[in-house]
Image (cartoon, rainbow, N blue to C red; front, side, top):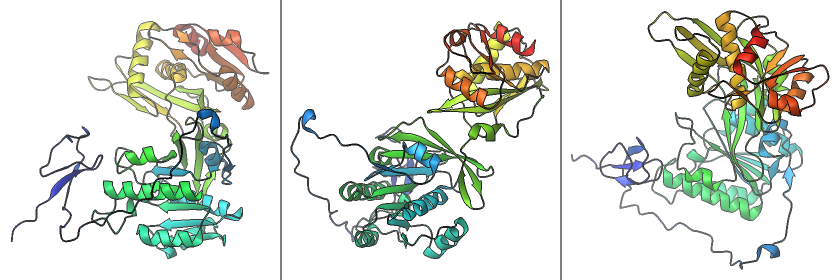
Amino acid sequence: MAKEKTVYRCSECGYETPRWMGKCPDCGAWNTLVEQAPAKEALPERAIKRQPGTGAQALRLSEIPEEGVERVTTGIGELDRVLGGGVVEGSLTLVGGDPGVGKSTLLLQASQQLAQGGKRVLYVSGEESARQIRMRARRLGVTSESLFILSENAMDAAERRWEELAPDYMVIDSIQTMYRPDMASAPGSVSQVRECASQLMRYAKTSGCAIFLVGHVTKEGAIAGPRVLEHMVDVVLYFEGDVRHEYRILRAVKNRFGSVNELGIFQMRENGMEPVENPSETLLSERARGVPGSCVHCAIEGTRPMLVDVQALALQTAYGNPRRTANGFDGGRLALLLAVLEKRAGLALFSHDVYVNVAGGLELSEPAADLSLCAAVASSARDVRIPPEWAVMGEIGLAGEVRAIAQAERRLSECARLGFTSCVLPRENARRLHAAPGVRVYGVETLAEALSILLG
């Protein structure tokens, strides 16, 4: 029996080729060609029905009426913060994250809050049965009569149901499991995801129904499927966090209705996701006091100041090449700061293994965390503790200078609110701010000066 011929299709752009290649000739992506069976000629695809044009006329910018964006709160403060204040009517939101991180749990809780506000919500699941969702809803305390559950992954059948119900909000869990029966490709393929998302986008814009899409992610952490999916939607949210830890972080990567710098923190409990309203106090609650290698930094995530514990461990290496390991901090930036410490501060680290960790699972990407990291490394290397009521922040240059940072007054106010008595800042910031009551500010110009104040 002759072997059935197969084709290789790029998971990023949909390019097809009869043989495997490491790099896609069309989009240039590596290792994206997946072997698939070709569509059978005996079952040709029917023509996809598309909506006709709107027939709208071109208008001058001044002729377009101004309308404010109306938002509806979900009842979950951290989710509303990341969305920019609430859900916008007719918006299409994509929520991605690792398996088991809590995407479905969070959206089911949000559906309960929206349904309790008098809105009609439809939860469409292509992965779970209605009975499975009922079991999870009982555990989360979801009991609203305005919440409807539909276990269906065929778009035609699901479309008939949502046209009958006319919901105000809808959740699709997940977009990779939905498919159009009139297309021969398999669910989750590039063409299926693109067409299903287009159909949902047209329904959202024409009916005003706000739709949440759950998206699977690849092992690299990107949304699985075509990249065009992220371009089509209005909001892209990433749910991050280790399933073995209780804290989860919700980030906005794209938001047409608000800022992309906001961040929401949740805590996984038995009754679902609980928002962390005061993350600074929560992240510092288990901090080890009086131990060398610990330094407190005040980071800015969007409009929110957040105190985090930067930890470092420096010890004599047992191998020829010292190890540099960073968790929550860029490894290249760590190597740069260690070189500055050795050259400008006289701290010999060439024979030390250095391990850096940001407690709580946060990622520090802003340069204002440079000084706190260097202080933590120097504290561990010299075995001298930093006073636990001190906070440190500042950017460090290659010459060892401490550069000014943004929003210093807001950071200082957060430190004062949590009882910190002293703060080491760049001298340029110290000259221009008004110190909060009870906080003593030390302005420094160089890294060596900062270490002499912190470590004596």
